[in-house]
Image (cartoon, rainbow, N blue to C red; front, side, top):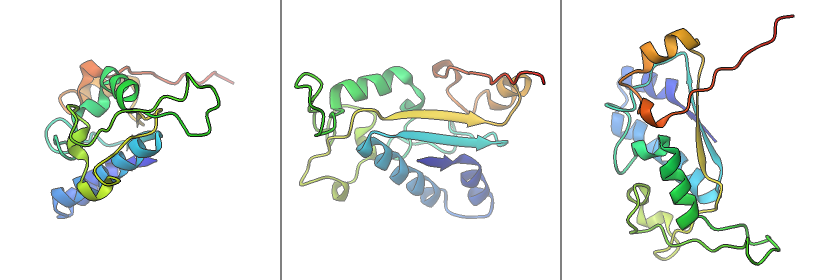
Length: 159
């Protein structure tokens, strides 16, 4: 599941209500959590300001960039797939709806199953940018919770 951060920035600049931009992103976050999938946040060549403009406790919590918060989410709420044969691995997660978790506030009642939302285990967030390693910190500092991120630079072998 791909969250196009550049599109969020462009939509905002073109006058689309930020609340609508965040709502679209929130729905994608909820879908990734529900299915236990990776939410791929594609920045492209844009410095999307998640810290100050494109986040919110009930839309896109900054905790989505925190590996420890996501690990806790998966351990506590993540449910293994029903077809998992190993009884020990067939963990049934807790109900996220109304729970004490930074991810609970993004849910809406109509996204629950009669007041229950048990996500699949495996949810994660990957953030990707086309910015070079030298520009990365300069352009994204203050726009992302850098202390929660683990930057990885792709190295291409010379031919």
